[in-house]
Image (cartoon, rainbow, N blue to C red; front, side):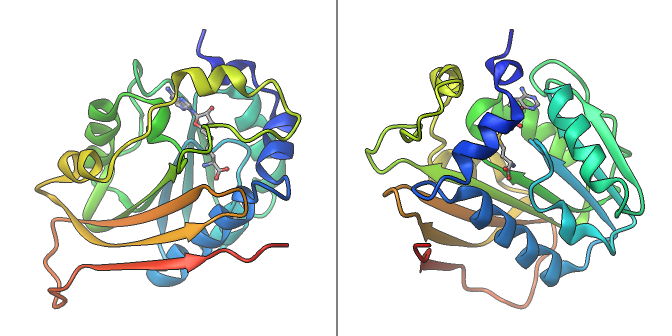
Length: 223
Ligand SMILES: C[S@@+](CC[C@H](N)C(=O)[O-])C[C@H]1O[C@@H](n2cnc3c(N)ncnc32)[C@H](O)[C@@H]1O
């Protein structure tokens, strides 16, 4: 069984929002930023979990939430179906199942802390199938910076997922995206526990006016 199916959603959220981790709030902010940049009509969230950031999709026509864990998706539905126009749950194991979203239909793909746990070839094949020309793929990867994969927050149920995690290098990500998903820029967020989150943007096929690739660093405030 995939270890993600064994982690209770309350444990996941407790760990990710722990004051030394702070990742839920950071990922939520990144989602808001992408929505404000693109005003998407259609969004697909891979590794949607319990719906972190979904409150920002209130003006979106259709949101697809993709995840292996049906309990996470059920929580996501309870929380966000009442405020969203059309929330579609897709329970699928990306490593084995097809993700049934209409081809070339998605304006924005959100893929936060997901690629570390899945078959990259299958994930990118799925992105390519659904992202419309000119659409944005936003990927967030974790950099452990030698602090270990899972911080010690007292939550032990997350340990089995650390065993299947693979840090995805910058080079591997760019190779997967090349040549049709064009790198637009990246931003690094330094977290209180010494880890970093790196947010990457890729545009499907489109060539824009900007010729310079941008990389910026951001110190996430302690709270
Ligand atoms: C680290 S969490 C993602 C965090 C989330 N994006 C957020 O902002 O809080 C990884 C998610 O990917 C899902 N996942 C892991 N492996 C998967 C697979 N093979 N197929 C589909 N979903 C998977 C897990 O169930 C989990 O919800």
